[in-house]
Image 1 (cartoon, one colour):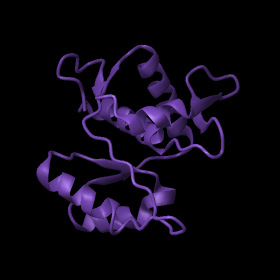
Image 2 (cartoon, helix red, strand yellow):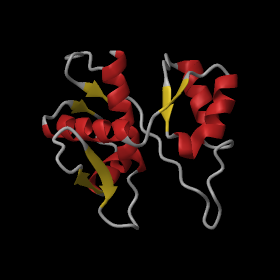
Image 3 (cartoon, one colour):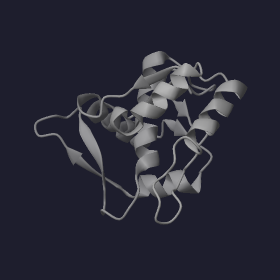
Length: 151
């Protein structure tokens, strides 16, 4: 959400949740993410859940049926803008957070790839294929939507 102290310029991370599959099994979205989002929706003022349409389309459809406003987030040109905005927010210390260790790890696992001839776009990428950056990508999409929606 927007910061209570500086809503025009700063975003506050209110919640971080990481899911990991059981060893050797794919992550079951229906028994992990879905109950969490529904509980969060019921107990907080959840305005929007933005998501990667490639990864979470089926889950988003189910959540819509439960009344959650699910909005797909383009992983091409829009993600490039969002990733650059996140980079700028971090650089300019415009993100407030609790210091969550999972989020910190995923941010530290990031590198970036600049779009050729573009100062306004970059892509968050993994420093190594074995590292996870999912929370950084979620933060990128979340910050972008918070600023767009004036949350």
